[in-house]
Amino acid sequence: MPAKTNMNNNGTQYFRVTAKVGTNPDGTPIRKQFLGKNKREANEKRDAYLAQIKNGLAVNFDKDDFGTAFKVWIEDIYRPAVSTSSYNRFETDYRLRIAGCMLCGMRLVDIRTPNIQSFYNGLLNTCTPSTVHSVHKVMRGFFSYASETDLIIKNPLKGVKLPAKEKKSETNTALLDSDINKLKVAAREDMSNFIFLFAVFTGLREGEILALRHKDIDMEAGTITVNKAMKFLTVDGVYQPVEGSTKTDSSIRTVPILGEIKRLLKSHIANEMAKHLKLGKPFSKDSILFSSSVCTYREAANVLKQFKRLCNRLEIEQATFHSLRHTFCTLLAKQGVPLKTASVLMGHSDIGVTAKVYTHVDDTEKKKGIERLAVYF
Image 1: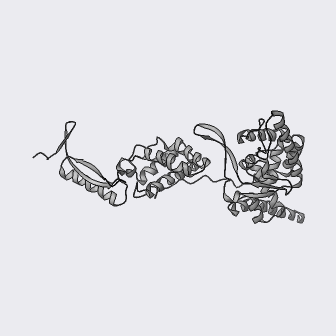
Image 2: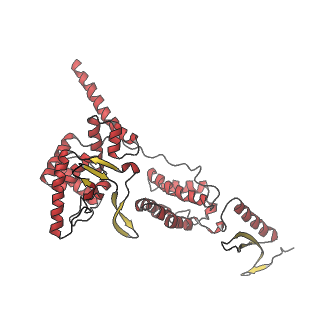
Image 3: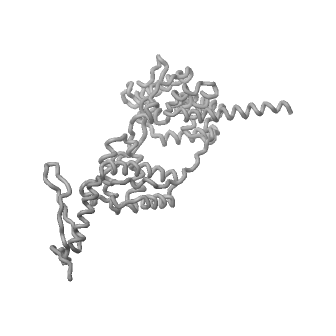
């Protein structure tokens, strides 16, 4: 006996049932139809759908696919809630590794832990374990949102196994005392090199230095106010300088200026004023402290290129801009500055980060101590 049907769709017979699945903001009912080969199948689909809603899923949950939902979240939910730099970090992982991935064609409610695991395992064919961890951080933000807004009942990230991260080298990257002396000479001979000596004796991060304005320097008090950071980012398709907050709340700090650095800083500021005058650009307290040749923000990549050229000329090996900050912390440790004080000066949110540098210095001193025992042989 043929199954009973009550509708025809493009020549195919179905049995259709309808049900109220929710209510619109204006109070009108939201109705949905369910099709089956017969009445029993249609009713089973209806009951399963209503059970999902009863369990907490949003109405029309079955229409959301992963790719569409993720794009809506990162652009309309995440982007307005965070800084430009935070959004750019997430957007890069999304654009390069998530958009168009194997999950994008799946319904959001169908994604399970094995699907996520397979996606992560596939990433390892072209990415490092650290990159997979970075992607996982973005995915965690999305699926937390999906769970909180009832797009899904269970977070599929639970149970996913992440690859072990590569072990980072614990070596101290601080410059040698002889290298610091070379930077001193280079800065005195050419003030364009002063920015590197400034970094060694203030400990500021590169983005913090490039964001400094003249109003952040108090010559009378001999202090630097650190309350922002700058980096170049692509915003709405345009590569541009973006001034934002410091790395952490602990990074907002006041750093005293060493006497000799203060003297050189005055010369640097005089050069900046002369540059503005020559270019016919107004100079004020809001002007950038370490500006480009046309008095705009300097790009970190160009600063690094200048530093690399200088290091090659001075025969300073394996140095990065961050090495200058590391050098500052190491100098504090060598001079017996208390760990807590050093942590505050560095703007570390975790004193353990500062302690790692201090541990390296202790190791060096311990080796020197053992070497002194050679007098007994």
